[in-house]
Every structure is written in C-alpha cells, then in structure tokens.
Image 1 (spheres, rainbow, N blue to C red):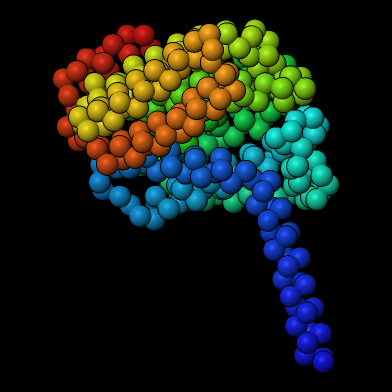
Image 2: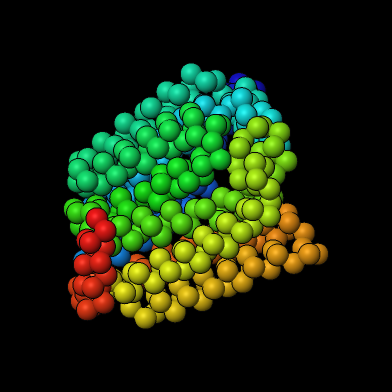
Length: 322
C-alpha cells in the first residue's frame, strides 16, 4: 500500500513538473523559434560554402534560438493586456494566470543572457550584435510602442524578423557584406505580405485589441494591394542572390517558381467573389512554404566561392548608393 501511495505521489509530482515545463515552453512561442531556426541555418550554410564549423553552427543555432525565445517571452509580458482581447491569444498562460508575470520576466531574462553568451563565446561579435539589434527592435521598439501606436509597426517588426538569417550569415563570415544585405532585404520584404495576410484573416482580433495594422486602419483592399507589391519586390530581391554570385541556378528556379506562384495567389484576391479570410490563410500558408524552400535552397546551392561578373556590378551599384 505504501509503495502504491509513493508511486501515485511520484506520478503527481511528475505531472505537475510537466505542466510547469509546458508553460515555460509555451511562453517562448515554439513555432516562431522553429521558423527562425530554419532561416538561421540557411543563412549560415549559405555563407559557409560547405565548410561548416559544426561547433560554431551549433552555437549560432542554439544562441539565436535562445535569444528569440527570450524576445517572445518578454513580448508575452508586454502584450498580456491586448492578448486578453483576441480570440487567438486569450488562452496564453499570462492571460489565464497559469504563469505569473514575474516568472515569465525572469524566464525571458535568463534565456536572453544564455543566448547572448552562447553567441558571444561561440560565434563572433558581429553575429551577437545582429542578434542584439533584432532583440531590441522586437522586444523594445516594436512591442512597447510601434505595434500599439503606428500602422508602420509591421515595417519596423520586419527588421527583427529578418535578423536570424543575417546573424547566421555573419556568424560564418565575420562580416556584413553584400550577401548579408541581400538577406536582410529579402527577409524584410517577405515579412510584410506574410504579416498582412495574418492581419486580414485575424481582422476581428486586431480590431478588438485596437492594434493599428494596415487592414484595420486603411482597409483590406489597401492591404491586398500592398501584399502584391511586396511580393513583387521580394521576387526581385530573391534573384539578387543569384546576380551577386552567391547561389546557383537550382536556387533561382525554386525562388522564381515559389515567388511567382505566391504572387499568383496574391493576385487572385482581387476577384469579386473571393472569401478574404480563406484567401488570406492560403497566402499566409504559402508564405511559409516559400521562405522554407528558399532557406533550404540557399543552403544547398551556395556558390559564394565563385562570384559572378554580375555580382561585381551589383556590388559596385550598391556602393554608389551607400
């Protein structure tokens, strides 16, 4: 009997520990961490040209993941008031009270310290600085002010979303060059239609929370136009990696195929009988397919060791505007 009671007590403790662990995991937004992990690996492998320093790459992936987790934890702390007004987020642990604000703050701070330390000692100062820039933009400028006050919050937030592949690239090269600039441009442009699509199919949530995203402030039609324009710009930006001599034709084929199909989907939103929510979900879902495919292809089709003549001309052109 005593053995049975002890076993039940142990099972109860284990269950409680699992629940607590789940809460600490949920507050970090694992889906966002995973997505950034793929793009970080893509940026690193693009720059590494097949000469991978395994320990450095692991430090990059682990460090960036911890920094992203920290930013997400702190964002949950800041957003708990507006999260309570949105159907999608009202079940988050800080809204329900399943996790205290103090615990979430401490969790975020510890993760941040661990992440930056991992990057500092495992990669280089430039990669760490990139991560710090993205962290400050997301957890500070975007979460505390721009998201709540300005229709341009999405534009500012896109900078932080573009940092992981750039940090991965800089971790491998130790420099911010044309390749890093192209990655920054690509991922910033990708963020915009991705985020606007979310804002359309979550329109009522954003409206209820008073978040001034473009569809709420200027209408869904305006957001649809912006989605098309940003995808066009993104398509052009993806080709710059090829023009710069950083990737081969395999990447270019995948980049054009996915980007143009994404554009076709975006243009279909102009039909009179389209269901905006269904359409926006499709555009959002394919945005993930697009950026995942490009992250994989720029990793496996890296050609940095053989820059093209077009790449030299492109670099020279960018220097004129620098």
